[in-house]
Image 1 (tube, rainbow, N blue to C red):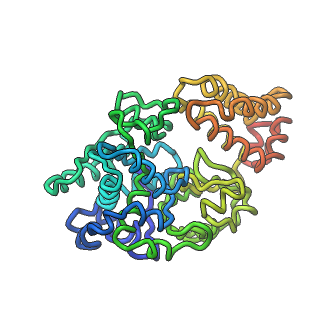
Image 2: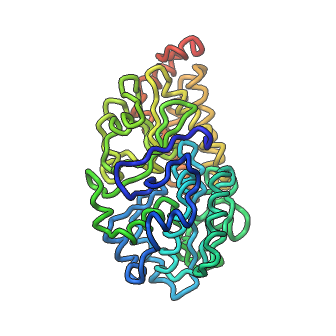
Amino acid sequence: MEGNTDVIAPRFAPRLLAGPPPAAGTESLAQHRSRLGPPAGPGAQRDAIGLIEASGLLGRGGAAFPAGRKWRGIAERTTGGAVVVVNGAEGEPGSAKDRTLMAFRPHLVLDGAALAARAIGADEVIVYAGTEHRRAIAAMGRAIAERQHEGGVPVRLVEAPRGYVSGEQSAAVHYINTGDARPTASPPRPYERGVRGQPTLVQNVETLAHAALIARQGDAWYRSAGRAETRGTALVTVSAGPHHMSVREVELGMSVAEVLAGIGQGTDGMQAVLLGGYFGTWARADEARDLPLDPIVLRSRGLALGAGVVSILGADDCGVRVTSQLMSYMAGESAAQCGPCVFGLRSIAEALGRVASGVAPGDDLYRIERWADQVRGRGACAHPDGAVGLLASAFRTFGDEFLLHQRRRCSAPARAAEVA
């Protein structure tokens, strides 16, 4: 989706997407330093962890874990030799935010990585970027080369292989160590023993870019944005159709309706919203319109911002069919090393495909629910949990439509004739 992704800058300045417009291309090191000044001074560097903790910055990779706590946990485990992995694999099909940030603001990401490296006592930074994101890889490669004369912690670029699970933190570490991008069972976790057996911080690129700005501007500056429980801004990828994405920086707590209005999209034709991406949750339109895009608030309602995806299901679309497609994708993208994925997700996806196509036997919905309960919590990684979590939200959101499909009917005008 790199060729048809819009980038919309925020009203806050300076924030992640402030600066030269996307048409100007990748921001160079000279432009970056001219706009923002030199990296954070020694004081901010020495107390970087305390500063990040005070800001309340949450990770932007999907789990929304406090970044400062994550850094401190690793810093307390090592006296040197740790590793920072800049996670830009972005295998989530609904997201374009990380590749956008790497393509246009690579030095902001590298500033954050250097700050984290000093804070935790790392002697290497590894940028782990999805191999399919060629523009982002080229930009990060040039940015690394521009900074080589400055010394500091060495940085190298590793291309993450295609695949949804390649961005999972243990899979990233496993690939860097062995060339095999499959998640590993825990313990130990990467923060205990990761790259080269050293404590390893695996941090999403957007999180590190925020950290770079917090180090320059201060924790109070970061907290000055945010309308609800979570402070700051976030990058979201908004999709209102199958062929176009918009990456937008929003103030956390903005409603779904406000975010859509920002790209000229109304909510009248909206049936439901997929929040967080393929690892996320469905919400009905009447519930979603006024929902604040805030990780803490959404979690309290059984929803998730996840990777910052806001994908709209139109009134004429079929939620059962789209969910079936998502589950088929998730089943196909498993690491194929655990029974819950190899057998459980595959069986669920096949049965769901029959329901969506109107050819399911009478007990398929019962089977799907039973299998989902059996899969939950049993994988070596969170992949099956994410998949069945999405499915559970689909049952809540499209429950009547699932029952209709079980009777071999569909309420979506474009699908009714195919299913009947």
